[in-house]
Image (cartoon, rainbow, N blue to C red; front, top):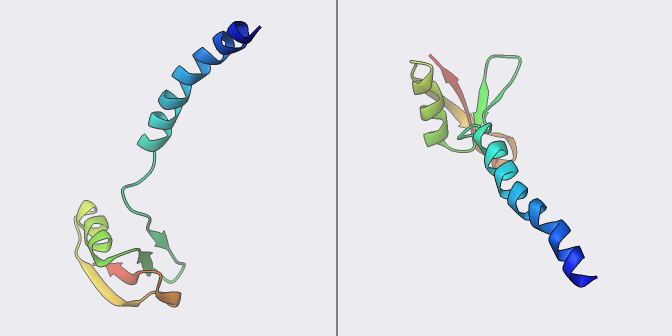
Length: 76
């Protein structure tokens, strides 16, 4: 009985890493949140610069984000 139980779990052990890898491919390298007033928040200045460079623009750092959760910036 123990052998049958272990055999039924084996396919699951192969599928879980694949599912994790596929889920990781869809996430952005940095978390950027856009607010209605056109300002955006990123975890760090480097993330803000990378986000704007990806859009072909330059980052203008405005201030620290509320609660010290990163920086507020605008792409120009």
